[in-house]
Image 1: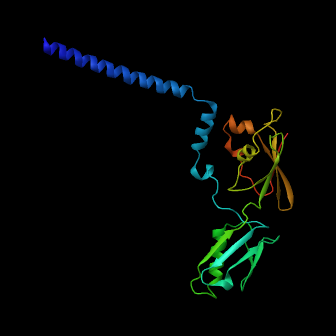
Image 2 (image 1 turned 135 degrees about the vertical axis):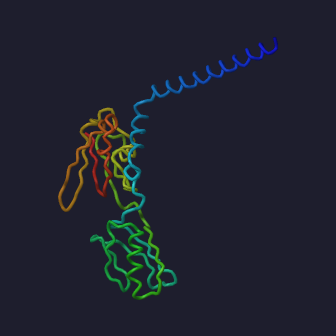
Image 3 (image 1 turned 60 degrees about the horizontal axis):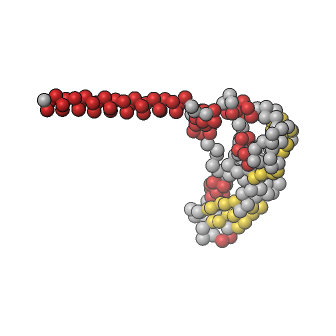
Length: 216
């Protein structure tokens, strides 16, 4: 009799365990079905290659920046320099050095290589004293139209978020980015809804210095 009761208990335990497993499985399935559109957009974005959805982590130097260049144990080769309008700096013995569009790391390596003719194994560091000299502009039907600092290659969506989003009258399908390249003005159409609803992340372009986003 005890063996029969023991067997029944084992069967009951197995049944209870199976029921719990089925309940957990059904709840997880239900949760997947209730995924919001926003979650789908984020999930789709994260599936993109790592290098595509990560902003470039190094600041690009531009005219108006002030660089602090320090050469270890060489005070004659340590100074603060202003990046001129032509994108160059003047450095002792080296003369003019093109720095615009380069990262501090690239400039450091270039200066260190050139100083090899004058200093034994030069140890150089380059830092930007005012890394917000590069600006972008967000205008039109956004909550806070203004100029904003360009850092880490902001994208269109990030810039709009900095401007606190759209007003209720914004035409999200007709956004434009005005860009100046090689002395010419280029107009880039942006469809915000295509980015969010159709997952067309190619339109969420990285911005460049002096880009102007206009939301009609």
